[in-house]
Length: 286
Ligand SMILES: NC(=O)CC(=O)C(=O)O
Image (cartoon, rainbow, N blue to C red; front, side, top):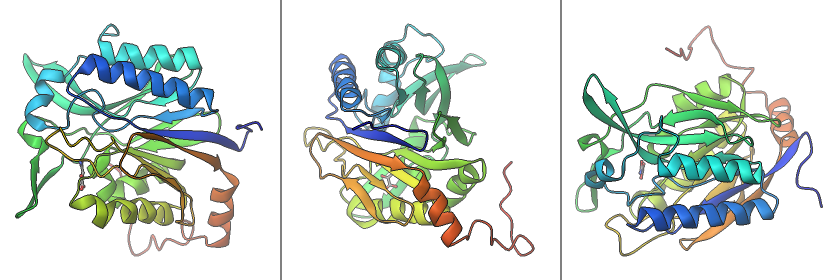
């Protein structure tokens, strides 16, 4: 069976086992991307911070200059996208950029096209700074700087918007990506054992129904040897809000056939995107 037509393509979210060894992580990511491609996926996504442990204090140590194409993570992503002729949403990595002699670190998603060229780059806009007493405290802003752009990239099937993890809690970002033409939103993410059971699926489904499109959330597998325990549950949601495909906490690849007619059908049956009361409220992109 063909997995692509002008209106549909196969998506794969790779729930990767991430270790403290960057070389192992990259090798493993490339193997899994190839496996997904062999199984017909044309758009493949890795999880948030797939080349390093998810720990603020470690981001500077693992960060790479992504403007240098020989940096190991960009090179591995670009090479495998080109070899497999796929769109690769490269989860995210800590990115280093020197600005006026000062190093800034971002949580950055690199997106490559089937020719291996960098198509887009999303820097996590909303930094994950939370304090849930007795449960979890996390402060990305200890080492990271937030990005300033809404990211949407083109494919031959549809435009796809990208956010990173905590970005999903901000419906405005998803709305702006939708107003720019997205029919799918993809969030590399790493919810945890407190926020995951409570909010992960709820937020993915909410963004799908709010914006009447497909939504994918792609997480690392749970690694109990790391300080941050990922909820996992990589999932793909269809526009009506039901879960098309999901998994639990272990390493796996989650596949979903994205049929874009389902976006058009939902948008014409319940035309909320056209029924906005712009005389009462308006979302303005700055
Ligand atoms: N890791 C994140 O950025 C977000 C998260 O875990 C949450 O919102 O919960």
